[in-house]
Image 1 (spheres, one colour):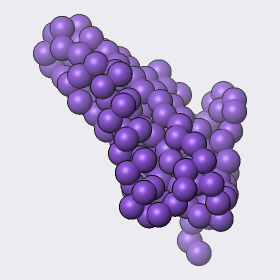
Image 2 (cartoon, helix red, strand yellow):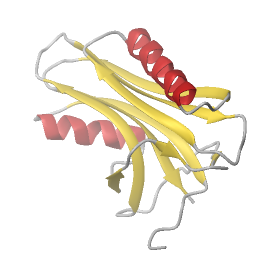
Image 3 (cartoon, helix red, strand yellow):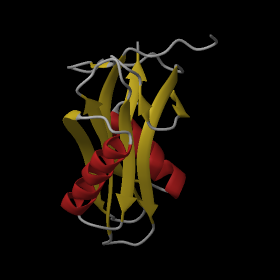
Length: 157
């Protein structure tokens, strides 16, 4: 095996305004606590038996390769509301994989949160895995000049 399967996870979110779309996104990463790492975007499976780190690590090693499933959105429309959210379906059976869903939209936070939780529920139903719980985190932002939102599930060991 080239990469060790993570055994822990934590949720992060942030929002920011910036000089450019990329600067705004970078600011949202910094606010969320993962801005000085190399994010490795992954598909949406929580490894079996993975447990939440609470509280999450105060600081991740700078430059670390960090697997993350995330939703993000940027906007150059001042006054626009943007939101991003992730949800995790945790199965009742700890020997089965959980499911992470990501969603972002030009909408209020409650709309995005409701949608991503429903997506996690439906994904677990598709897998025929009874749900122990649904966890979610979100970020919302009213754009000042150029804005970004970010929400993610970080896998860690």
